[in-house]
Length: 184
Image (cartoon, rainbow, N blue to C red):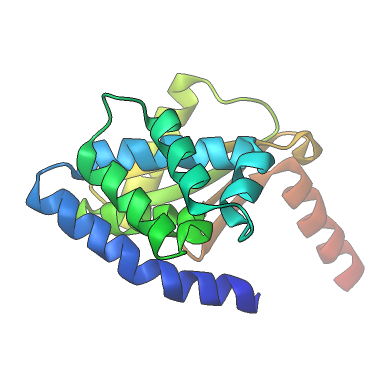
């Protein structure tokens, strides 16, 4: 847990700097999409994450990989930001930096992140219904959904918005029923 706190402390100023650059160049959404893409890559490929985190791999190799991943048509501000992270030996915190950036971007856009766990993949109509419900309870302008599937829920959904949790799953209902029966 302390390493997560340390990562968050290191990531915060870099995320704020990235947001500042993005705002000055009117690229906040573009950087947000790039951050989401990079986070997806880091989460999908542990070797990539380990490559950037390994202090024994030379900075030039890390820079070459960043340039290869981003390609020629990438935004030069974002590319230079990532290369600076390599130079400052902060590239290991890239995941935390991008997570912080996305949190700052959501705050700027008055958007809330709703984590939705369901027993089966949600249809578009179900996602829209959840978005409307979250807007109603959070007074946000927009909602960003992060969906996960957990077949152990049996049915229903669990929605997490900030510190608020709405458990509308069959598993949750069974657990609450069990508690009521044991307390009776």
